[in-house]
Amino acid sequence: MANDREGRDNRGHGRKRRKVCQFCVDKAQSIDYKDTARIRRFISERSKILPRRTTGVCAQHQRQLMIAIKRARQIALLPYVTD
Image (cartoon, one colour):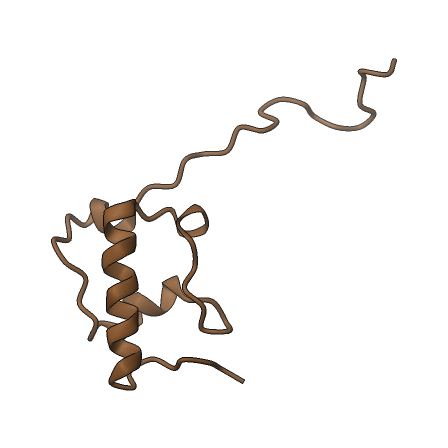
């Protein structure tokens, strides 16, 4: 009975659904730094840029997103740090 887990369902254990890049779905060619409402979803509460594994963004768009966030911070559209 060592292999039997009591009260747990083992179906699908370790299988998570792969996240899809939101920018690829919208067929975005570039990410606009002035679109702060869209960019805010990809930064944490502490204003850190969230990683790809968390957001599901592809590598190409993650690079563009990083540049857009940094540009928006530079001209004070987004904060560097929140209290």
